Amino acid sequence: MDLIQTYSDQNSPEDQTQNPNSTSSSPEASPPRLLAGKSAAPKVDDTMLALTVAQAHQVQSRPIDPTQHAVAFNPTYDQLWAPIYGPAHPYAKDGIAQGMRNHKLGFVEDAHIESFVFDEQYNTFHKYGYAADPSGAAGYNYVGDLDALQQNDAISVYSIPQHEQKKRKIEKKKEIAEDKEPDEVVDEVELDNPASDTWLMKNRKSPWAGKKEGLQTELTEEQKKYAEEYAKKKGEERERGGEKPEAVPDKSTFHGKEEKDYQGRSWIAPPKDAKATNDHCYIPKRLVHTWSGHTKGVSAIRFFPKHGHLILSAGMDTKVKIWDVFNSGKCMRTYMGHSKAVRDIWFCNDGSKFLTAGYDKHIKYWDTETGQVISSFSTGKIPYVVRLNPDEDKQHVLLAGMSDKKIVQWDMNSGQITQEYDQHLGAVNTITFVDNNRRFVTSSDDKSLRVWEFGIPVVIKYISEPHMHSMPSIALHPSTNYLAAQSLDNQILIYSTRERFQLNKKKRFAGHIAAGYACQVNFSPDGRFVMSGDGEGKCWFWDWKTCRVFRTLKCHEGVCIGCEWHPLEQSKVATCGWDGLIKYWD
Image (tube, rainbow, N blue to C red; front, side):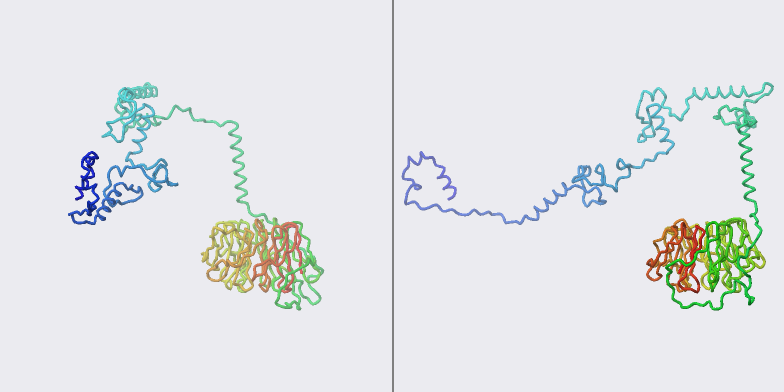
């Protein structure tokens, strides 16, 4: 019916005019019926087929990531060599990922060419203009100037042509003929044989050593003068190095009224009523006395042990003086026995004797009362620190830290060296006894701390960190559990004296300027305060618990090098400086 309807619609108007009574134009004609078309084929779901085709097409067009190590499908040649898509990576140059680059110009494959062969072809190309192509088979392919290649018979810079070899042989024969004596007969066969004596005699010089002038037999006047000056200088250095320390006569002058009082007591005897009033220490506020008698700076001070009624001072004017503290406040005795500045001093336990160490390389043991030198010791090196073993039965044992990196131990009864502790890499600055005097800690210019068992020259603990500086002064806390070390980076560090000798990172005292100076660090007798001099002449006081600066006193013009807390009077402190003064503060 559809086809019929379509056919009738396609009739020309002429037919319609000729047949006016047709059904289409008739009002009685029935309306056309439209029916839906049907297919005889079964309906199939092709969604998965379309997805598969699309995915295959996508795989073929998908670019390959140059950084991936495995490809899950077989890529085509075009895919493998397609340009890299996407934005340029900020750290990848020329489209090569950073991980794939092994040269500044990209990725270079290794070529197995010996360095000699490469140098030969490189120099040949620069000289002749051609070189062997390493990718060619057995070296038959060449690159560069082929005309020069044929002209030179493809020689390299290292291969000598025939005419050059002949030329060299002729020159060699001429040299032999010139050197040969007229009456000497030389066998040509032996001359060409390197194993023969004739060849060895004629080839003593290397072939490429040029003609040299004869050896100069006589020195010129300028050379003679220089040689004499050099020999004289060396002789002086040898004498200076081997000379013994200069000896100075030991003298002592008493400045007091009487060496013994009306009861027969010595002037060094402590007052009977000298006792500690209480155990609580206070920070001094004002200057109460000044001792002046040294003509140069004062390098160290020490209170008389346990009582503090006298104070001993070591001066850079080569003199050691002892001063009265309680009564007159005057100099009681001067000890003269060193030819250079005195570096360190140390009392024995009862104060009847003391040690001095000078830059004249001498260590002297003095009688405090009479001023006589009991004994003298020297190794030919400068002693920087002297200590006696604090044990009552070992008061005859002397330890000295020397400038030659050693700690030397003497038995003062026999005068013999009984032990040498030789592990430091720099001059030894301090010796501090710990652990009931069974061990001692030393510091040195090598920026390390070393712990030793007394009498055994083996380090049992070595403390050295990259951040550590040299520590020229160390003090033991009254509780004997801590060491305070003056570090040259303007801080005081605290180390435990227990087995591990660890740095206490929670306690650190800073604020003063001590860099470059061996300013003494010390504790108050009750352990509540830490004090130290500094390079600007101040004395600093810190609270032990809080590590805060408690007070600063302007003590000296120049460096305040030493500070000592009085052992009995809890608020009194003595300081010394390079201005030659010793000051007493309350």
